[in-house]
Each structure stands twice: as C-alpha cells, then as structure tokens.
Length: 214
Length: 214
Image (cartoon, rainbow over all chains, first blue to last red; front, side):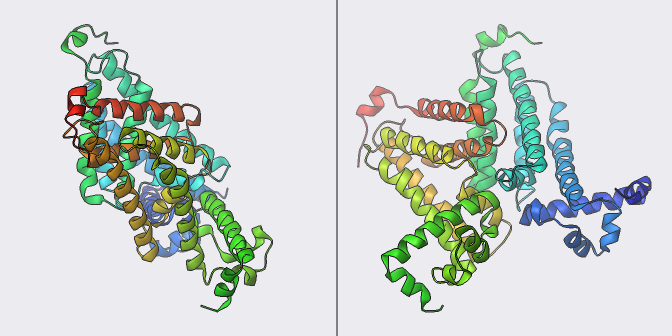
C-alpha cells in the first residue's frame, strides 16, 4: 500500500473526509450492492479525483471491506451501545429490537449487511468469509442478550436462546424484506411478532423468583 | 423484437434449449445476482453463440425477466402445487413450509427471489415493480393458506393470518440467510420455530368443533 493512506488518516480533515466517503459508499452499497462500490464511482459521486479517494483507500477491496466495517460500526453505535445501557434481560432485548427496527426504517434502500450476505454467499473468498464472520458475531451478541433474559428469569427456564435468536433475527429480516412489497404494515407486524415471541417465552412469576442471575 | 424468438419457440428442441438456458441463467443469478445475467455470459457458459441465445431472448431485459419468471414457475411447481394436494388447513400449511425448506436447501447458492428483492429494492423501474408484485402474490397465496387453517379450525379463531404469514415468511428468510453463517443448525432451528409458531396458534379442540369451513 502507498504511504498516502497513512498521510490522509493522520490529519483530522483526512479522517472526516474518510468518514464522508464511507458514508457515501454505504449509500451506494445499499442501492447497488457492495460490488457496485468502486473508487471511480465513489470519486465521481463525491466530486473528488480518483487519486484523492485512493489517498484514503489503498485498493477497491480495501474500500469495500472498510465500507462494510464502517456500516458495522454504525450499527453497533446505533443499536447495541444504547441498548447496553438498559437493564440486562427483557428490557435490553426490547431495546435492541426497537433500535434494530429503527435502523431498518432508517435505511429504506436496504441493509448493507443483508445485502452483503446475498452478494457474497455465492462468491467464495475473503469478503464472503468476512461477511459470514460479521453475521456470526452479531448472532453471538444477540444470543448473549437472549441468554441473559433467561438467566434474569424474564424468559422461561429451558428457553433455547439459539431458537429465540433465530426467531428474532428472522423477524428483522422479514421486516427488512417486506419494505419492497408491503412496507405499510410491516413495521406493525414485526412489532407484534416480536411481542408475541417474548410473550410466548415469558416466565411465570414463580419462575422469575427462581431466576439465577449471573 | 426479431422474428427469431418465435421461430426458436415453435420447435420443441427450441423449447427445451430455452429451458436449459433459463436453468443456467437461474444458477448464474443465484451466484452473482440477476444483474450479472447477460446474454454474453449465458452464451459462453452454455457454449452457444450470442445470436443463438438471442434467438430465445429478445433482449437482456427480456432474459432477466424470463429468468425470474422461470424460477417462479419452478417454485410453484415444487412448493405450491404438491402442497395443494394436502387437505386445506394445517396439513397444507405444513406441506408448504416443508417444501419451502426443501427448496431453500436445494439452492445453497441462494434464492433468486430474495436475491432479486435485494438487488432491485434500490433500483426503481419495471424490474423492481415486477419483483415486488411477485413477492406480493406469493404473500397473498401464503396468507390464503393460513386463513384456511383458521377457517378449518386448526388455528385459533381470531388468529391474524397477516401476522402468521409474516412470521412464517420471516422464518424462511432467516433459514435462507443463515446458510451463510450457521448452515448446520439453521434447518433444525427453522423447523422447530415453525412448529413452535403453529403450536402457539393451535386451536383448542372446542374451537375446532366450532370451525366454519368454507
């Protein structure tokens, strides 16, 4: 890699330009997919020279990967971090799903992560592995939140966190995809489905008193 | 359009070549997306001349749309048609979900329809409308099957078919996407989640006797 990226990153102006470029690249990826994000396209939409963009990203592969990572940082900052301030258990799980639904609503052109899994599932290589690893760590974090809800006695003992995680994740994917053909009711349906899921696994008060928080 | 397509379609050999080409195009679409399906690419993978492919598809747009429609025909033939032979209500709904899971398992490179909704959600135009309309009609068919299960008294009176349809569809999307990062357990999780959903809305025997089949 040329020394240019380091130079650009060293200045705060360079850092803010990089953020603006990554935000723009995310917008492009949501519309046409990560494979549609090129240094040339990004330069022209940003009104910059290709060499100006190259100063921030060493290669197209570097740009695509950093675009995905930048989107992941936004997701963590907007969905996970605020939710972690809620008490562990159902309150935190509800905060995560509410913030997640807000994230989906805020990205009407589509979710970069789900788009990426569709783009790369048929393309073995480092990017596919990177996307798979990213989805996997998100699942681990979500399953941890579900596990805590069981340990807190908010969800019935014996509840399988992997199953509830799969159900929650599926509902969010359903909400994401529904925007194409039934955007009007999808938000309401998803919210009802989530509450329905929590209600199904809700612990009896007796179970709650027998909870074993860790 | 040139008269060639009609000529090719007129012969049974032409019809079978068209099917082979569409099957191949579906495989390409699953791997790289419908936008990656071009007459040139298809010709080279099929070992045919571009004009030979043009004899079956008047234009690239025509090829892409026919590829999606062909995939839809396969889905109906493999998922819906056999399920319609099952008694209306829960047996038919179970048959649909089982066949749907088999369809997903049979397409490890991805589902053309879900891929298409991701590809075109950010690209307004006739293809986006076509995909949205396709997803919408599938939802209508699925919701009809759920409604029958309520009318048959298999699902509790007052069950909202739109909500159960959203939940079922979401679980299948979750199964589809999970193949990227947790393919081993996804099939088992999806099956348990579906049974879990049916159990939640299962009617009491008393309700069943009060069923009003139409």
